Image 1: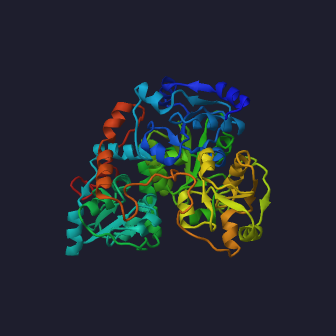
Image 2: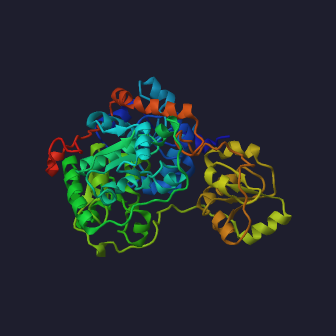
Image 3: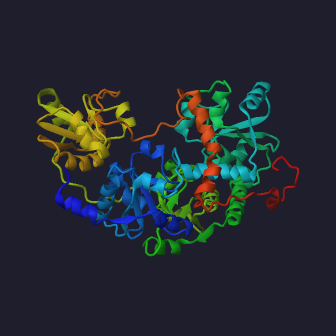
Length: 552
């Protein structure tokens, strides 16, 4: 039941309509249009630029993903009431210009708004538009299989994350994440006659990777594997599993050539330039929201980085932009230590209508920080905590229920024996599925999300509520047993959308439906009309290549 105070707070929230949101997008003004549902329902239907920021982790992610406290924020759902809760929590966190989208998903539809399915739609739609304008070359799975069998001179480059590549890959494929291709591929194919074939799971990353090499003036013939691993499977070809082929080190000469070419591409794309002095002014987040991203690998970042820059590989930033920068119309600032990866990622973001800068003039001395990213968090609720040892004793003798609020994928992989999976955003509904107990112990991977969930659980149950200090990681580090599977699900696992192209058990009809959906994105972009995307068609002439070369 909603309390009188809660009702008053909900009724006092600002309400924003379709015209307000659309006007912001059309005018390229700042707006964080946040779909606060879990990822699976988000993927079933949402506006193009409604970035998914689930209510479950809102407090833990808000300060990183919403860098300016007075930027316009509009929360969105399908009428479940999550948007109102999210708005209240954002206001409590200090955000001052927050409101709820009036009418939810149905309100968007009723106003004539276009609805998109799946995830990372802005980037995927841009990729389709880019291919249609640039005529990015591609080769069918059957042709590639024939060339492999014939022993043709070619290199197959898989531009996905390493974990995706390792799950399943094209035979002979070498893993080079998309943001690295311009830097790494030249040394994999030193002979300019060697054919380079670029693949991902579907279409977007392979097309962007292929076009990156073309834009940067690589003299080799380059083509995408048409429809990626999906196309490979639909052509009844076998995938490899468990491979670990990666690119070798890059020569200084190759780095210098790639640096010059990436700079040209970035400048032609409208990328702007910044220096160290600019960073100090932008970090205050006054008047303009600014994101700071280090586009190198995580291992490089942890070795040395600039303060306040968040690590995200350049290829993933281009592929999943709204996950890292949900505030449309904000400024994005990129750095690397080679002058290649930041410029190439920035070139794509600029074509996707972001105001993007690359920081010039940095030296290794500027990369003075080390270690992993340290998130700025709000003050978490105070809960009674117990140690892993105490929990072990309780499990052996006491009436206790362990509530695990980690991601479903992590819960399925491994959890405390007997633990129940609960999705924090669905906590009220989950209570009916939980056994009653005199004690409840809440855990998550590192325990932070558990602190938030425990405070809410304490208002819904009669038993005592505790948090496992250090979370499930502390339990594991103490040498305690774990179990896998999903025996105890108190919530539906809707925190992640199952991609039709991931894993080795995807159904052919689902994969084909996914491709058909991608092919239709250009028409959806036309109907929506808010994207401002401007893909550029580069020619070899900017690098002195003659027409008729393999590049062209």
